[in-house]
Structure formats: C-alpha cells, structure tokens
Image (cartoon, rainbow, N blue to C red; front, top):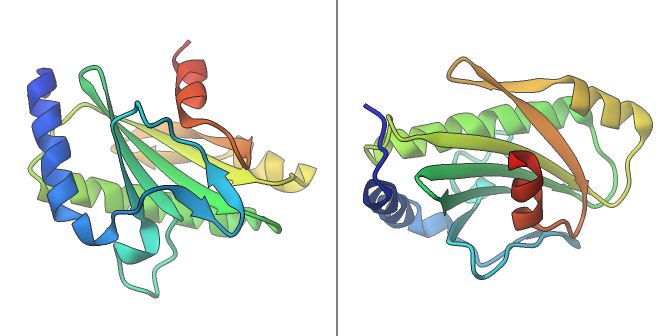
Length: 164
C-alpha cells in the first residue's frame, strides 16, 4: 500500500521530526558552502554526522520535504574545496540507507518517496564531475542520478528543474 493521502505524508513527516530531533539543524551549510532552502518549503534538515556512528561516512545533510503527496528525500554533500568522487559516492549511498532506515523506524516504509542526491562545490574538476555524473545511487531497486551543483544552489529550483 502506498501512502497517497497528503495527511498520511504529513503524519510521517511529524514522526520523522520527533525521531530525529537530536540531529535537526536550521540550514544546510558546511564550511562556506550552502544549499539554500526557501522558508516556504516544509523541510526537515538533519545533520548527517549526528544521525549515525562517528566512524560511518555520511553526507553533510539529509533533507526531508513534503511536496504534494510525496516525501522528497534530498541527500546533500557540501564541498568547499577538494572533491573525492569515490568518497562522495560512499557517503551518498550510506546516507540514503540511513534515510530509509529512519523512514522505516517511523513506520513509513511504504511511503511514496523520491530521492535526490546533490553534491555542491565551489568548483569542479572535470574528472571528478564525470565520475559523479556517470554513477547512480541505487535505492530499493531504483537508480537515482547524482546532481552536481555549485555552492549556493537553491533546493526549490533544483526540484522544479528535475520535475519539469
């Protein structure tokens, strides 16, 4: 059964907020690189490192948003300088698994979810850019692209562009 009613997604969102309260942050930013999130968007922003064991490689931010009857999960890795594509791929996969585990703990395992994997950086070396764009993150049998963006990108604009 897929949760189709907007009220059921909202209920799941509130359970996620309560379950991950300890990792909640106000904005997605790391060492001068920021993902802009409009205040109008209903989002829960979690600090990756606060969600799991310190030894696990995990992305900087896990963002849960409600758009229509869907829970949008954005995994964001923020880089000010050097990008090591292989490390980033591991972090994105680990973060996706952590997000799924959190959703499952909040009894939303059947919720309609869409994943977006964002890597923000000040600049891109062509070889690292190519590694990221040629790879996918696999979640529940579905492949999701990695979206490289510049620091300061706006989440609403990214989501609108991807849906259009």
